[in-house]
Image (cartoon, rainbow, N blue to C red):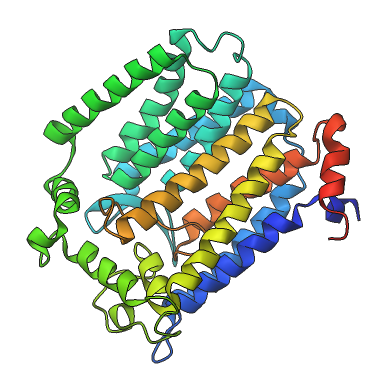
Length: 371
């Protein structure tokens, strides 16, 4: 009974309609249902991971040695990708384990949130010192570069945004933040000249003018915007999305699931989905701000940055406002790695919730009276 009371059922309940929306969008009403059937299995595994992690006591994370081991293991998995990873669509980002494929970059995002939360929680008083920007930046730079060379530009951007968001809320001075922005601009310039592949540069150029090459680099973005616009207010109806069902929109189960959903459910459906994401973010932050220590609070804030970054970038590229980077939409897109990492992050948050500050337990209790 104590486990039931300690769970944030509002947060968990908000995830279920999003999972269902993803499933119904990728369900094929004729022919095989490969993506649908695999996604059902991944959801079952992810929910099991969520509940298992919710029961753990995460006060052991306050010991730095344990986190360093996890961090080094995450870096090692990224290094091993260069040797054993499977090349998929020009990116060596996956380990193939029999019938399953795992993308270590997704788990590295959650690991980085924990590492940065631990680092900043011990140094919140002196965070204004520039050395903490540099040290935390080094923690971020190593996985950033290992992911970028795969190349996985989308995940590398998320890694950077997690660091940027967490250092901003940690109290960095505005002057130092300005220097960070200059450094980021210089880094982008170097990546454009020496790091990005021709395909990645073409995607960014197509963002500026997607209609200039709708048969080439801008094709996916063009078809995605058609799908979103054709949904209008109430959508075409489930199973009647022409762009996705007739294969005009490639990879609609993953990179463009928002566009496929918007075409079939319309503006009303999109507003419901965004409202559910809003509920999830609200509950993540509500749990974060009653954390037992700064570590728990910073982890919750970092987790919200992780979700917001994925949501904004995925929707932005689906409506033609951002370059196509291949990022999934949390809880809706097909794929096991991102689902496991998302529910792992939420499960860790629920475990931390069990040790909320005693002065705030009454507030948490009142929030769930009658639920």
